[in-house]
Image (tube, rainbow, N blue to C red; front, side, top):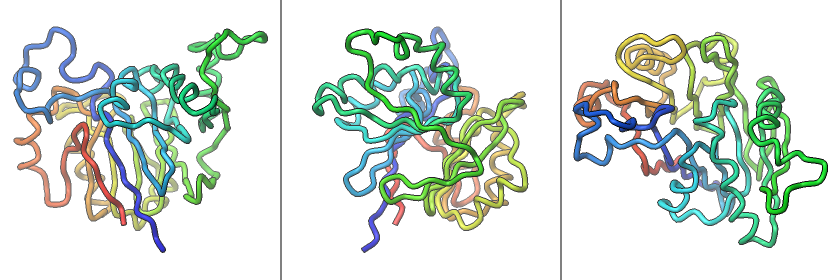
Length: 260
């Protein structure tokens, strides 16, 4: 019997979140909760397994908000702090589940960054109470199995930095990108639910604009596309959604999507 995948958007904002500190823009002053965005991350529930993609600085609050009390694995897209800054907050998962170790899947370059960002994880004599995680190296060209799910990494470019997106069955998640090669685009054929970054309406050196993301989404042709990693410059949630083609919407924090 096929088990559905349930995706929860833990955060859909850019590196500063929305609102960024001190901003008085129309979006940042909006009363619509869909205009409030924590740093980008998603949670995937499959059968009884709990998987997270990226642990940004808001990770602790995101798990509390969604009532998530266990994590069985973490996938990382890249090493930027808005995607890695909450890894230390995995400690209560360790403590509350009999010192359970959580497997982490990332590129070698991301592991090297963790050794700098979280040097106390890697001391010869471990600091008491450090997060219990096991690092597993992955590459864009190699799919791997996780709890019965085939995880296909997809290499996209974040300006000059390679970043991993992930395809899981009919679902694909891509953030922090402004270019996808033809080889990697081929991995998206047949995707039914696509998540793609769309930073703002004006050009940016390392992120798709709203227009670029829309054009790309139409070319991929998923039944439903959600945009994520959005800044306050994207515009008001309800206004932008009304302007987008059918089958393309802005995601929002707390949105749940069931992939059958």
